[in-house]
Each structure stands twice: as C-alpha cells, then as structure tokens.
Image 1 (cartoon, rainbow over the protein chains, first blue to last red):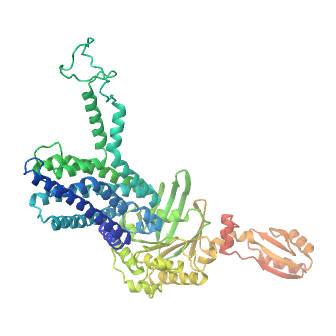
Image 2: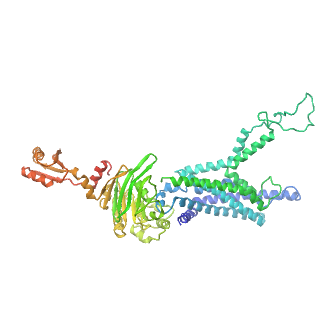
Amino acid sequence: MSIWDVSRKEVADSFNSRKFLLILGLFTLFSLGSVYMGINSYQQEMEGFRSDGGFSPEKPTLLDVFAPMLGLNMPLAAGLLALLLSYDFISREREEGTVELLLSYPVYRDEVINGKYLAGIFTLAISLLFALGLSSGLAVYILGVVPGINVLIRLSFVWLGTLVYMGFFMALGSFLSTFFRSSWRSLIAGVLILLFSLATPLMANIVAGQIYQYDSSPNTGVQRDVVREPGAEVADQEPRPQVEEDSGMSREEVRALRDRFSERVSRLSPTTSYTNYVNEMLAQNPEQEIDPTVSESIDNAIGYIIFLLSETFLAFTLSYAVFMRQDL
Amino acid sequence: MSVIELKGVEKSYGSHEVLKGLDLEVSEGEIYGLLGPNGVGKTTLFQTVIGLLKEDSGQVVIDGEEHSGGKELRRKIGYLPSDISFYPDMTARENLKYFAKLAGTEPDFDELIELVGLEDDADRSPADFSTGMKKRLGIAQSLIKDPEIIIYDEPTTGLDPEGKRKFRKHAEKINSEKDKTIIISSHITTEIEPLCDRFGIMKDGVIVASGTKAELNEEVDSDLGIEIEAADTEKTKQVIQESSLDAEVEEKGKGLTVKSTGDIRSELFNVLMENNISVRRFEVGEATLETAFMRLTDNAGGQQ
C-alpha cells in the first residue's frame, strides 16, 4: 500500500537527516537538563521531609522528578519538535518539484498526507521514548530509587499524552505546509501558534481582568449593608463581602466569574489541555488533598486527551480540505 | 484504436480559462507531438490526462475508460514533467526503487538504467546531475510502471544538441521496442518533427489542427505559392494575369510569387513556356511543420 511506502521513506529520511539528529540531540539534552533540575528539587524536598520527621511536608515521589520537565518545559519543546518535523511535509515536495511526479503515480493525496503523518508520529514516539528513557535512567542513576509499577504506569500514560499533544502540532504543521507554499512561512506560522497556545492562559487572565474588573485595594469597594455612624466601632463586626458598585456583585462573585472565563478560554489551548493532563497523571493537582489512584487520575485526565484529539482531527481535516482541492 | 480521447475538456484556474473545450485523439502505438507556444495549456492538458487535475467539464477517456483519477488508470500512464526533480536524499537508483514501490511494480532497474545510459551514475544523488542526466533518469522513471502511454512534457528543454539527439533516440527505441504510445509536447517544431507520427497544434486552449506532417502542410500549402524569377518580371506578371489560371501574382524582391488554391505548377510552367518567358528560377514553396505551426498559431515570434 502506498501509505506505508510513503511512511517508510519519510522515516528513513528523518533518521538519515542531520536536521532530525540535531533536533533529537537538543530535545534529549533539554529533557536530561529538565530532569536534572527535577532531581535537585526532589533531593531538597526529601531533605525537608526527613528533617521534619516525616510529618508535614509531603514525602516527594519519583514523579516529582519529572514534573518540571513534563509540566513546564515539555509543552514548548514537544510542540516545537513536532512542528519542526511537519512544517514542510507538503511544501517541501512543492519546493523540490517532486509533488507532480509523486502524484502521477498511483498514490492518492490523502495517502501522501497520512503516510507522512504516520511516519512523523512514529519518529516522535521513538524520539520521546528515547528522551524519557534516558531521563529516567539519569534519575534512577543519581537517586538510586527504582521506580515502582505505579510510577511506570503513570509515566507511560504521560508518554502517550505527550504523543497526542505532539500529534496535534504535527497535524497543525501538516495543515500549514499545505496552506503555505513556502516552508519558512509555514514554520513561522506554526511557531507563532505554538507561542500563542502557550501564552493563552496568561492572555486569558489579562482579558478576564479587563472584562470582570474589581478594585483590589482594601479601602475601596462599598460595603453597602454597613451603615457607619460617626465614631462607631466596627472592628468586631463580621466581615461582609465587598460589593462592586457597577455590577452589584460581591468581589468573590466577580473573581469567580473572572476565573471561570479565564479557565474556559485557556481550555481552548492545546497546551492547557496537555499540562492539565500531565498534572493529573503525575498526581500534581494541588486541589487534590489525597493522591488519586492511577485509575482515578485517568478518569480525571481523559477529557483533556479527548479534547486534544478533537483539535488534532480538526487540524488534520483542514489539511485534507486544502490539499485535496489544491491545484499543483 | 484511440488510447486517449478528450472531448470538450474545459479547465480554469479561477477566472483564467486554460482549456476551452479541447478535443484530442491519440492512437495506440503512435508518437504524437503536441505543439503550442508557451503558456497555451499543454501542461494543464497533460495534468488533466494523468488525473493530477480534474477537468471542469468534458470527458477524458483513457484506453476506453473514463478517467476518474483512479489508481488503475494512473498505472497506465508514465509521465515526465517539464521540470523534473527527484528526491535529493536518495540516489538515482533509490529514487527509481521508491517510485517502483509506489507503482507496485518490480522492473529490472539495471535494464532501465542501462537504457538511459546512467550505469556509472546510478548510485549518485540526482541533485548532482546535469539537466540532461535528470531528463534521462526521468525517462527511466517514466517506464517504471511499464505503462501503455508515456507523456513527455517539453522533454528537450534545457538539453544541448547532443542531449536532444539522445532523447530522440531513446524515445524512438521505447516506441519501437517496447511498443508504447508516446505524447511529446514542445514549442519548437524542429525538435520533435523527425520523431512524431502525428501532430496536434494547440492555440488558446484548443487543438486548432491535427494530423500527420503532410496533412498539416496541406492545410497551409495553398498559402505558400510558387516563386518565379524571370528575365522580364513585368511581362511575366502580365502573362500570368492574362492567362486562364486561377492565381494571384505579386512582386516579391527580384521575382514574383504566384499563389493559387490548387496545384497549378504544370499549367503555370506551360503558360510561361508558351509565351517564351525566359525563366531563371521556378521554385515551389514547400510547407514545413514549422510554417504550418506558425501559420496556424499566428506565432511568428514563438519559434526559437
């Protein structure tokens, strides 16, 4: 089948190309660096835990070693790696002048896209496994702690989730490579979208702050229910919710609206879905007082993956729609 | 039997109409030359035949079957694009092997490489090849599917005279030994004239004339006339005008040009002899494919 032939060629091209080896090298170094930071933090937390006699701060787990890498640094690095592999899927064929010849063979256009996508996912899966494997090895080597089955299962799910996240950016790169005739434009557009996705929670907060405003200074805000007589003692009165003059809502209500708006907008960002997923799977959700079981974590995280998958399908459908109707 | 038949094919890019109800018929086993100035729609026509483009209206029939862009029909057509490019990260041989996988065939690669004379360069990247070598590799590539029809789009562009000669040799060999139907496009008549059995002349998105060289010449022969140089030009002109010949006479340089709708060579010669005209030169203008092409496309500047 043509799809496998296209895939095999793409995989071979990737593994033989200097560009890919360079990217993989940087990605691995970055992963090792992030895990090294996690190890230092783990050791400090462990010292704190021991010095406290094992009571108040919580005992760190091996998963905490991976938290900085997967929760903070990976969203940028994984997205970038996926984009760098896919931004020229179709545009490169056009630039090199091979697309006309390729499609004169018994190959459908969707097979070209699917083949390249499959090859990309395979390459990413291997790269990610390589980077995670090396990072885990480093953690085990330095800390001398062998990960238990629970940790391994959680890390496997994180690997899978990261692959889905990368799959989204690969589908996006694929779409941009059909939309733009120039590979450079496709790459620039992809990186801008990635940065936008990373910055979405911050921007959502800013926008929410503009829409749902309240004065945060302690002396403003009218306590309408309180009638103050001159010289009256109010210190012992129960604190009342501060009410905004314009909306008639309490400060807490405005804050809740603001948070809800911010959260809803942030959720549109694939990066937010991914970090939420990772936090759930690494049991890093600060709102949970008791560490969830793996099964509970999956239940909590599955929605984020489904949302990421739906965004991936959308990007993929767009690349189909553009490429299938395009004159060469 | 026709292996390619196009009926009323129309294709536009946005508001730009490229093919305007084009009709074309190519018979099995022939080498068909498609002549037309640059930008007339030859490549669009080929891409439509191959199924790379979908016609807006009309019918494309390949080997008796209407072309729907399916794989089976694409297997029947080998294609050499005008700007042929190969994957630079693979050697020439690996490129051929990749295309063979896509085509689902297992050709004899050594034979293909030998056919185009690339034995010493097969394990090099085509990125290092000259234009001529790329075209030769392109010819080998066009045979990978063992297709019934081969389309060469401007195959001689960028080739030196030796390269052009070699291309003609390869095409003839493929046509005669492998019994393939070949369509070659060019905007330079002399490059494909010795090679093709029939020609189609394309202008403004349609084929304006089609046939063998002789048939095309016949269409324009009447315009060419007979050139005469005589001792007394004035008297000669008067004699011809007063004769019963259905001909027009005009002075051209030192002589005369006589034009007629039919073949009047012998009658004209007799008239001149009977009137004791001393003829220094009597030359019948012979239509070439180039003159036919130029007349039919009104393209005096289109030739190189």
